Image 1 (cartoon, rainbow, N blue to C red):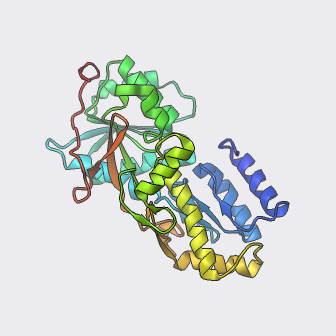
Image 2: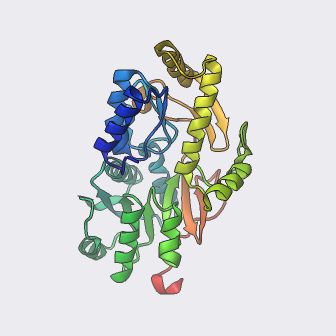
Length: 333
């Protein structure tokens, strides 16, 4: 447990490699910890797949031994803004808040670039420290009357933003948030106030992919819910798939732990060459460019919450429900 602290994650990985002699690593939860861990993997030549980290900063560093199952947020974050831009009338003004950590700031930046690309006016862009009281920030944003309020953060910050907006009777035409809204805590703690929040994802529980280990997405869901008592979100799914990718790469190399340095180099080469079809979808790692060793095999989705369901509302060729825009007011739910 690195407690989402980069130093704690680095200490844990150093110990696992030098004392526990691990052959490969299933990576940490946050982008910040992943950035702290990656140089250690380079030093000791130990491969890792993260099933969670989404900051594009990781992949731009071109770490040889670090791979990721989830496309970076600059690949996924543009999908909701493109979907919103297709509405009639089209949203014209957006306010963006980002929390000052590696992932959340990258998310806010992705939202800003996508908004500009889609012809929207960014009326406020604010990067705030963790633990910020959002009430005065939301009050200032309310006065600007944006069509969209977009937030780069995790579930804690997202819940606080929704609560602050409701307390101030502020309801933009759309709330846009990224990681956190698909966790069970978000809908459990907010109830109907979580409805209609829009987000980005690359996987939802109603996808239908074949899988050599579980059978298909539905079978994975049943096993996961039986084990953990809740519906997995896309990061849980990606983390499970990371194990499947390592399994496929080890089979390709024909090696079994303990691995020699030569075996580990072969494992990295296999990961670069492999494409694995899983319940999570196809996994294929880029071998050059800005997303070096990130998974570029998945299609970014726009989702909208309704109850505990994650409805796919974009892109148009994949949607399973229509986007609700503008969203109903607090008292109309």
